[in-house]
Amino acid sequence: MPASIPQYVTEAITGPLPDPPGVKLKKEGLTVNHPVVFVPGIVTGGLELWEGHHCAEGLFRKRLWGGSFGELYKRPLCWAEHMSLDNETGLDPPGIRVRPVSGLVAADYFAAGYFVWAVLIANLAQIGYEEKTMYMASYDWRLSFQNTEVRDQTLSRIKSNIELMVATNGGKKVVVIPHSMGVLYFLHFMKWVEAPTPMGGGGGSDWCAKHIKAIMNIGGPFLGVPKSVSGLFSIEARDIAVARAFAPGFLEKDVLGLQTFQHLMRMTRTWDSTMSMIPKGGDTIWGGLDWSPEGGGPGDFNCSAKKLKNNSTRNTGQNSNRNLADMKSANYGRIISFGKDVAEVHSSRIERVDFKDVVKGDKLANSSSCDIWIEYNEMHNDAIKAVADYKIYTAGSILDLLHFVAPNLMARGGAHFSYGIADNLDDPKYGHYKYWSNPLETKLPNAPDMEIYSMYGVGIPTERAYVYKLTTQHDCYIPFQIDTSADGGSEDSCLKGGVFSADGDETVPVLSAGFMCAKGWRGKTKFNPSGIRTYIREYNHAPPANLLEGRGTQSGAHVDIMGNFALIEDILRVAAGANGNDLGGDHVYSDIFKWSERIDLKL
Image 1 (cartoon, rainbow, N blue to C red):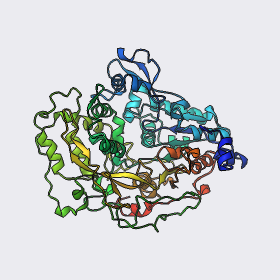
Image 2: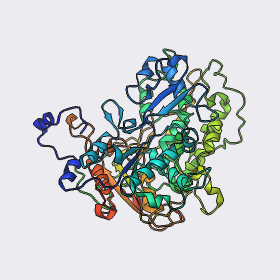
Image 3: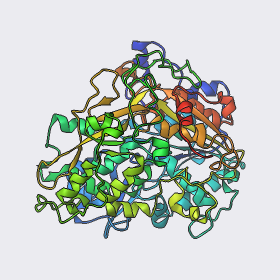
Image 4: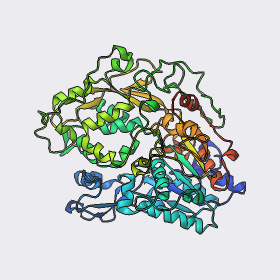
């Protein structure tokens, strides 16, 4: 296995290590069977320069993303310029071409020593897999999904490669393994490949049934992630907010010629793919002003509880942490609240002022020296205050908020993504590509023999909602900021540093990763008319016991789970021919089935 410390050194200290899954299953006689397709997620795939401006001289076919990130430190403004897309088209800026790295090396390691797919690839190789039976479906993860086809014909390439793998492996269907945003990208692909040309790939209504055995989704943000909202709203997440608290103003200031947050916001707001992860389904899925599926009462999830070390004891349909201390219930439906009191008090006691009719006015009074254009430059102080005066934003009103503060961004995103729930999936409008990555606005293919797995980590506090405040620190500022002083006041509180946490894998909440396989697609539903079998495989997080374990073999974290031995074993068994029942069906630690039943969704 890829490792920084030789195994014999580790074993001399810790004793004999268990066989990696590939070695273990080879001893059982498992061998290469179905070809496998990897679909990487956002940011984990390498990007290289093919054409650039004068400042990028000497970087032809060098990685701008992934690898050492050396150019970020040597010429940061040039790097940001070349990593940005055109703010109007969402495609290449004039004179710049950045393209995805191809082959397994595109996403085996994110940086030196930091594996993504490398451990899984190595274990597959143990039972006989090699390049001809493995394919990395790399793509430019910055682009909207349909634009990867418009610019690079990536969807066509994936279609052709899968057809070739099936044809050259005795007609055996592929096992597709998407990770993170790659889950949404492959949902889009399944609709595209069967849709008629020119919008689709023209493969016909039985293409998926003929070519795909199983889709094993790892850490899938099927219904979006709240973290995407804070990223678009204030270029923040928990870690950034903490860094700001330790060094107030430092990251926003003009350090070495950089206004760090403003440059990052301008760059990332050109990445249309980020808008694929805005929460889908509105208040029906994520909760409203005074309710949320996971916030049913004390004991639902303990945000500070230490997790079990041994993954071998699995409880189907039960929460293994139920005997832990109760905690105060959190209303996660309020994804953004301006003030801790607003986040906690009943909605009847909150006076809200609608912001949508407020005239934005001229530019900010203190933005005259700002040479980094972000859409906040177009907002008057009264409009910014109106955003805070609205007090609470749920998944339903988040879209109105983003349209108000970032209309250009959302106009571009709205052409490629949708976030609703379909009443009638036979409506011809759902034939448009903007609906294809939303599982609540599209049908699964007619492929009753195919299987779909949701595989994800649990037991790690995961960002679910935020407490914000207004900030007016200096010129060219981002006016909204997570309030890191907001805290729940107890060890077990799910509010820490301005962030409410729920159960998940540190990036994707359980609700988003598990709902479709727990309820939305379970059995024959309007979203799954052919009754494709679905399975949930949860992996209870256990951190490494010591430094010699590296990132651990029982991790449930969003990327580290790619080295989880139990997950890898499940994948290898299915690739070798097993089905979901052979694996034992569902293995669930969380309350995903209970939470799903609280969601009133017509199926």
